[in-house]
Image 1 (cartoon, rainbow, N blue to C red):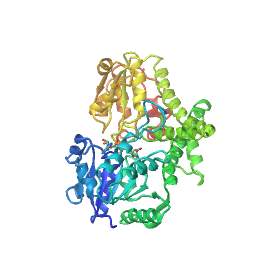
Image 2: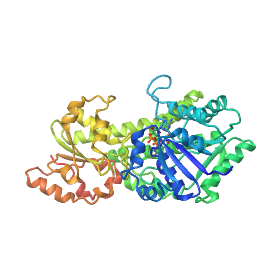
Image 3: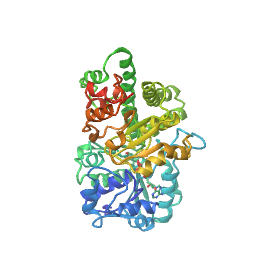
Length: 467
Ligand SMILES: NC(=O)c1ccc[n+]([C@@H]2O[C@H](COP(=O)([O-])OP(=O)(O)OC[C@H]3O[C@@H](n4cnc5c(N)ncnc54)[C@H](O)[C@@H]3O)[C@@H](O)[C@H]2O)c1
């Protein structure tokens, strides 16, 4: 089989960018990205894409309508495809067995059932979503139990390692592509077919092939390791504050050890995003199911430390404002979980904002890429405790950082957007002082967030808080 047509189920942060790059790099392959959400597909077919990702617009412009299509016609796309990526969401379960930890595989199962119902010819089905180990077995069972005469399936695991904010570069210059498959002649052949797709632009030495279960586990392991580094340095930020050591100096010194390396060693408010917490919880649940409580407890601590850091940060903000933020105007700069994305899933800014709202603060929020409705949604959806009407009354969304900070008692920098480096904090402070605010020798938000602290001098740090 030569792959001529690819279908991708799920037009989200993974399906959209990944398939856009495949279409760009493989002009001989027709790539159709499908979603159940009509709205999402309409956005992919419009001038304003549903997600912000540097470089993505250019790639989509180059290929859309040529060999890249976004469609809700899932039946047609499945039927004509040689290879189908499953890139649907795999959130943490919110009900039932494993609630709060296990991955909810209902969308994976739904996708597998769609394929089983609709496929009329042989398919290679590729699990791109992040899943617990052995999820491919579920897909395999559903497909093989419902196979139409003459239709055969091969299931591969091909987890995605892109990071939001750098997705296009990560896909184009992938350090590694991981493909797991069955250890059978048919399995090896399917692996080779998918390798051929990636070899259009990825050097063969960067494509790793493994068995299916190693591939699935490697993705969980990679995210757990990355999150663990963040929790490790954040734990040391607390020690630094208690001792007078400087966490950025410690990180620099530790990171110079080539065995450790400098990446993911920046202290922060805590990790966010749709993946780290979900995937570690998934690993914890897996360990518990395998009767490995010590392993589960080890990884649980990475999540606990992250919660501790978010709460510690917010507590410090409140303490710095004389233990009361009631009716105080607080500017929140940045709402996405990191720079260069509009994604707010699990953003630490949500936790900080919610606590400050509970304490009666008036929040003035600005983020360069997060839509106003998204901020309201995160702070008012049913799982949050704050009353939606009260929240709406107590937050104002701004179109610029300068507008948000005007007259603020405090500025809380939650996301390390580059444009915040350019802000004239001295002028902001002077303007404020001129209006009668006193001078403070307190330092605020940057204490924990080395990413932010690195562009604010010691002097400027003192200018962040007004009392
Ligand atoms: N976001 C990341 O940075 C990232 C990185 C690596 C891996 N992952 C993993 O990739 C997967 C997808 O993540 P995402 O961030 O793209 O999620 P997402 O929520 O942005 O997108 C998933 C999409 O799948 C659609 N969908 C669900 N069931 C469907 C079906 N049966 N047919 C068609 N469409 C369907 C949903 O409508 C949604 O638009 C998850 O398992 C995630 O853990 C995410």
